[in-house]
Length: 186
Image (tube, rainbow, N blue to C red; front, side, top):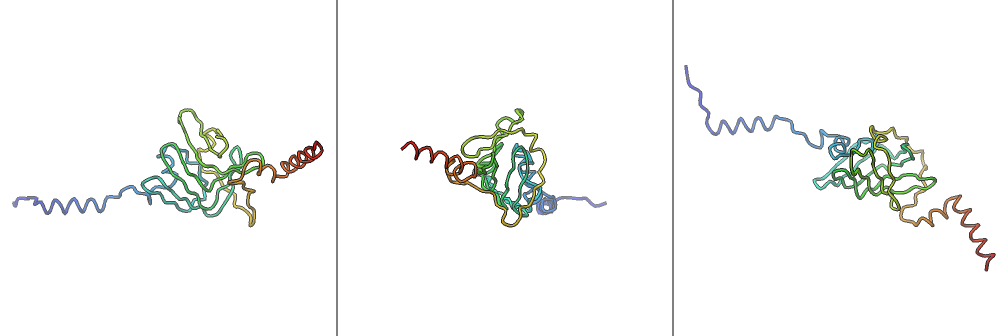
């Protein structure tokens, strides 16, 4: 019987063959929900309507939805068709494309963070305050209702709270009443 010996070139060929045929986990095999979970965040932060996403090595991401839509948690949330932000463990910073309704006003969500996962709490930074929610609200991706044509939330991005209130119906009434009182006192 003949003997079998391995030469360095055949070992290299075998290693190359194994490396090129063993599947590795990469972005294309992971969903955005897997990425959220691996970063200590609940998967229900994004709706079921994600069509694709990209993320770079620094955590900067883009998520594309089938269309802009609304979801309901404790409050109503508006998702624009394109959402961007920076993902790090337990936090999404520099967030754009997500708005939360508080009373009758819409506020851009600028940051989402989970400080201590065992606390069961998640925080949304809406610019003027941090809103605290139960993590249980975000256990599964929500159904998202498509917006009707021309159905855009009355967004007050970049404006002051006083401007936002004065533009709203209730705020406008209060503003006009205050103006009448000021005029009467002069």
